[in-house]
Image (tube, rainbow, N blue to C red):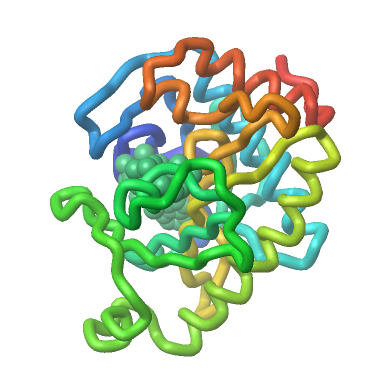
Length: 237
Ligand code: ADP
Ligand code: UDP
C-alpha cells in the first residue's frame, strides 16, 4: 500500500489518498479542538492513543456485524480505511444527559435518558453543526431515506454493543457521535470512535474520562483516554 498526496486536513486527522482508489489512510494527529475550533491544543500521545482506540472499537463493532471502514492498523498514528462518500449528517445517541442537550432543553446533567435519545446534526462547522431532523434530511436530500434508516439502525446497534463493553470495564457510555458514508452504495461506519467523540464516565464516581476534560479545562486529558484503554484491556505502546 503506497501513501499518496494529502486529500484533506481536518481538525484532528489528515486524510491521504493511496494507490488503491478504494482506500485512504487516516493520520491521527495530536491536535485537539473544541467549540468549533475556538479552543485548540496539541496533546502529546493523543493521536496514537485515539488511532489504537478507534481500531480496537471498530474491530469490536465489526465482530458484532456492523460494517466499518477500518481495514488495517498501519502505524501508531495511521490506519488504512475504505474510502467512503461521507454523509454530511452526524448521528448522536445519548444514554445520560450531558453537553448540548442540557443547554438546549434545560435538562440536568447526569439524568438517565430512557429510552436513549437519537439526534441528527448537520456536519457544517460554519453553521456550528446545527441540530436537524429527518424531515430536513429528506427535503434537502442530504441522505437517501433508506440510508438514513440504516444509519439509525446501526447507530442503535452500536449502543447495544458498546454500552455493554464499557459497562463491563466499569464505565458509563453517556453519549457518542457517529459518522457514516457510502462504500459502493453500502452504508458503512466511518471516521472514528474515541474519547474525542463520546462521553465516558467512571461508573462509580462519574469522573469524566473523555474530551470534556479538555473542553472544561480539567487537565489529564490523554491520561484519562489511556485509563479507558487500559480498562478495556488494550495494550498501548
Ligand atoms: P473534521 O473534518 O471534522 O475537522 P477530522 O479532523 O477528524 O474532522 O477529519 C477527518 C475527516 O475525514 C472528516 O471530515 C471525516 O468525515 C472524514 N472521513 C473519516 N473517515 C473517512 C472515510 N473512510 N472516507 C472518507 N472520509 C472520511
Ligand atoms: N460530538 C462530536 N463532534 C461534534 C459534536 C459532538 O464528536 O462535532 C460528540 C461529543 O463528544 C459528545 C456527543 O457528540 O460525545 C454529543 O455532543 P453534544 O451535542 O452534547 O455537544 P457538545 O456539548 O459536545 O458541544
